[in-house]
Image (tube, rainbow, N blue to C red; front, side):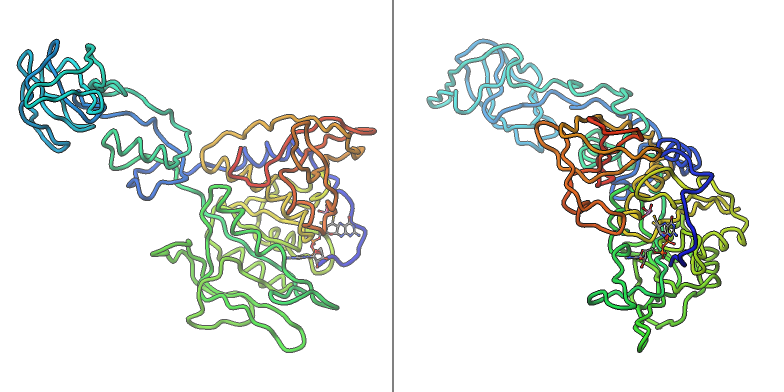
Length: 443
Ligand SMILES: Nc1nc2c(c(=O)[nH]1)N[C@H]1C(S)=C(S)[C@@H](COP(=O)(O)OP(=O)(O)OC[C@H]3O[C@@H](n4cnc5c(N)ncnc54)[C@H](O)[C@@H]3O)O[C@H]1N2
Ligand code: MOO
């Protein structure tokens, strides 16, 4: 927590745009690996997606009906099912029943749809036109054809395409792992805030932000929320592991004050305001990026900087000229793990994650930093003279409309907003801004 000492925008603070670029540049993408299709949703292609074969591999019927050869009328003979491996050959003037997707017999010139077919005994009449209702072999792609470049995010359509062309695995850059540590002796995790108690509003935001940003949440095994009589204090403890079925244990040890054997893994590790606990947690948490909320300022209980210094970390960004969120910081530990300091004020923490956190995760995923779209702010929005403002806005047909409640300790504005307007520093009012999505999965 802040101790009320004279904090100000840090002398080393960089502009909001420069901060994003520095965070993106400081992060390293993981090495590309080959993974089965059911393990790559949300990853980024590490190599282009190339079709091993022609799709479709053979000429196929596009409609239920009759495969015909030549001009009608035709004599109908037999039926080709979707699973028939060898549909045979059609003689001129002959037809065979066929279903959508079945390979057409060789010699087929057209498919007559069942609703257009007039059948009398074994005699068929109907409209036929060369190639009609036939999906030609190789019409979607040829063997060896590149369908998607490296860098594309694997989504359900990409997974379906990979399967359709016959691939069982894809080469991807694995999703980075991100862990969340929340500090603050005053924090409680149930019930209302009150004198001496502040309800933790950052912990509940972080898991969803991490996964929406395309990273994998590291959970903490054995962490247990503990309410201490009087102090209402929470102590976290345990070994972090990657969330999900069959979670992998990736670090041992414990931090904090109380450990409960057999406690379910927690998505957020709650730490007391203790330099020792924070230093140990930073040392033990195995994740590509570790988020630490609170402790970012320079008060007597703000231990992040001393902890980072004692671990030999180097700062990538130490303060950002933005409102809210100016005390945010990004540092690199000696082993390459990044640590992101999120300010304790909840909206400031959200802004810091969307600024430095998303930029770093984007690079770790192997993706370029996206350009933000520009939008009109028809009613104008006051600028800060030297800092970029992040303002909750609703989007209308005419542009962005600020909705208020955007103080750094408030989440009412961001919770009701469609996006944040990025308002460049200036002497007066801006009538245009850029848009920063509140959902980091949307670019
Ligand atoms: N004298 C000055 N004091 C402060 C300044 C300043 O320039 N001069 N800057 C303020 C700004 S801006 C921010 S942001 C905070 C950053 O402080 P910390 O990151 O060290 O965080 P704390 O001091 O622990 O907490 C600040 C505030 O936020 C509440 N908090 C903390 N964690 C949570 C949480 N998980 N959920 C909800 N609320 C939380 C905490 O109780 C404090 O009220 O420093 C300012 N001070
Ligand atoms: O800059 Mo603080 O991070 O506004 O609340």
